[in-house]
Amino acid sequence: MSQERGRSLSLPRLGTEGLTKIAMKNVSTITLAFAASVLLFATTPVTATAQTDCLSCHSDSSLQDSTGHSVAVDGPKFHTTIHGSLNCSDCHTTIKEYPHPAAVTPVKCETCHADEAAGLVGSVHANRAEHPCTSCHGDAHSIFPKDDPRSAVYPLNVPRTCSACHGNAGQRSTDCPTSIRCISTPSTDLR
Image 1 (cartoon, helix red, strand yellow):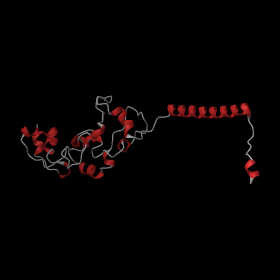
Image 2 (cartoon, rainbow, N blue to C red):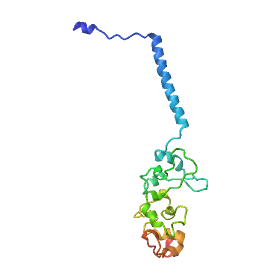
Image 3 (cartoon, rainbow, N blue to C red):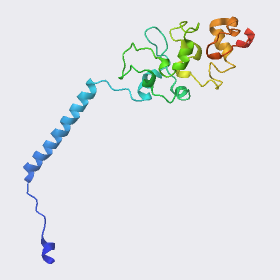
Image 4 (cartoon, rainbow, N blue to C red):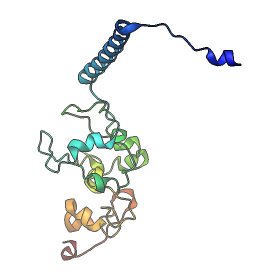
């Protein structure tokens, strides 16, 4: 037993020159890997994976597209809306990189809301606007459930929503989409 204690593990002696070569090789490998990853990152568009990427620009309330239309999104408000649990790319499906091209494909609400879109076919509302869904429901980033008083289609808000395009005559219409019946309300109540 005393002989086993006396044994020591012997490693080859590299000397100062050997250690320097190993250290330099490791530093060179690390530096090369770092430079390659920086170059790859700098030349490849970053995939937009989180709301924070989009909101880094779109939270600016003055942000507009080339036509002067606001493309700003109120992030805290959006997260409380009916679409707030979705990722931006769930609706903006053609945006694959960050930053994205200036011209983007319009969102197609019917991808998720096929029944509602089918209900609009043949309606006066189907072709009345570039985006018929937001004409009634409001900004897509601010849509609340229909039973929420903040919703444009909350029953007590429907007269105001319809009268924005139809005036008082629209409030008496029996041709409202999705079985909503507009009610007659004096114009003074709409302010």
